[in-house]
Image 1 (cartoon, rainbow, N blue to C red):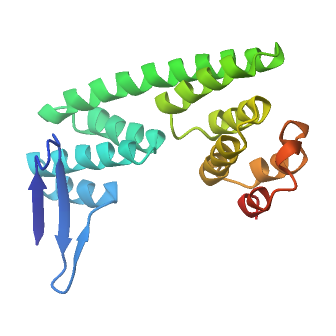
Image 2: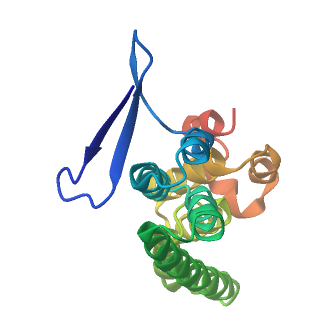
Image 3: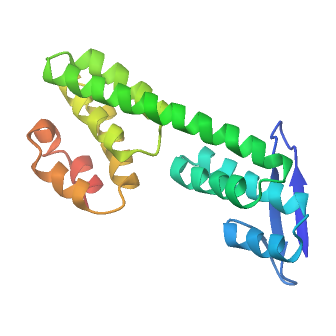
Length: 193
């Protein structure tokens, strides 16, 4: 049995919950929706639920995961009205990623030129545009170290490490001279555990 909620608190997508007879759980796997759409190829609710899952991933800073779901909707289920919204979301994600990349590059160049305040501002904006990119958060940590914002640097580094898919970023941080002012802090050591 499926429980569907929609348009709650101004949201413009559906949330889908699965009742298995003993417990209610939020559906978070795109494959669940694909199974429904395979059985019921005209199920607008399933397509809307899949779109909602993409929105939820985007809101959780998983921009890549959101983009994959939207792409699935556009390429596999183009006849649903929600596919047009998914295409719009893909376009917006691409725009934001390009802007974040440009701001990240600008921030890197500003750091090299000795302008850490400008770099920190550009990198903070880049992190807002593409919050799931660990490289941006790492660069922001470096910029904040150079501006003397220790707490901001630790927060950015923590986020970068949290987002990194492997330990290479932790290893880099342990030996990166740009982060040396943080090295003896207990918070730094805790982040890199």
